[in-house]
Image (cartoon, rainbow, N blue to C red; front, side):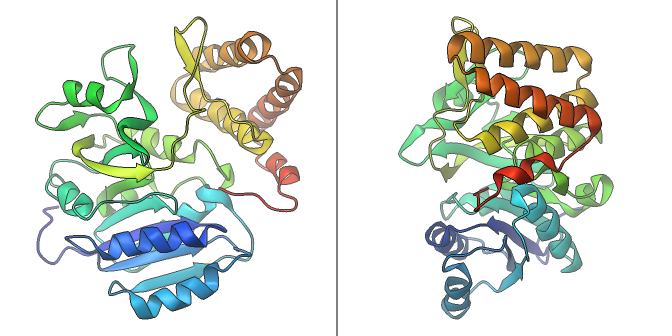
Amino acid sequence: MVFGVGSRIVAVVVTWNRWEMLARILRAIDAQDTRPDGVVVVDNASTDRTPEVLSELREELTTPLHVVRLERNTGGAGGFHVGLATALEMDADLFWLMDDDGQPPPECLSALLQHVDRYDFLGPAVVAEDDQRRLCFPIRIPGTAKVVHDLADVERAAVDGLLEDVVIPFNGVLVTRDLVTRIGLPREEFFIWGDDVEYLWRARRAGARVATVVPTRFLHPATDALGTPMMFGRTTYNHSPSDLKHYCMVRNNVTNLREYVGLLGVLAFLVKTVWFYLFTRPQPARLRLSWEALGAARRGDFTGHQRFLAPAVGQ
């Protein structure tokens, strides 16, 4: 499909109890050089001022808002599942997907659109909002074992401003309708963590053309715990102080690795988990929680995270 004048673009934003960040990102979307034709906001049963703020923003913004309020918090995975399904019903040709805590600069969407005829799944460089030379999420340079944290390393690896086969999903990514029609919707049962990676890996398996448009940015709060060095600096581990996030990370990571990498990938991840919580940051309780999450992944049980949801949790 050739995209051009007349292509319908719908942004999808998933939110939960972060009304100030939500207002910021919706204003940033409205300030784009090329504005989308609409924004689907999935409200994951927020208990703060989110409904009121959305009502106020409907009057303030030029870009039409379509709000889907869910009866319970389904996490980012459930939110993007519903949001993308809603955007499909709105006959969009392109879907611009993002969490509520990011911030696209005014040229972000127009920069992505310049490459959409060559790629099905593309996004900006995701950088820490307080230090834009630092990647918010570490990236492994394709064809190497090198994991980098600095934007300069990505810029050096890019060709004509593009780093192919790499993208940080659901952080300002642009996805084509053709790809979504082929691969379906994100796995809503994942709740949080790994749903974005699974969607990217599913897209690659389906032959999607993937790239990061390095010269454009997507600002995101720093995530310093991601990519924590371990094994004497030879590798990293995605540690989180949240038991909910860790449980979902292990369960969903094992699920993804088993499906897309194989048992050796699962084994390598489990070895890293044991090493990290025995030697890097000794926490025996985390090893027990990891074992529970592993069992849930083996059974295909995606309900165990619910015990962490009282009184409420974020995405």
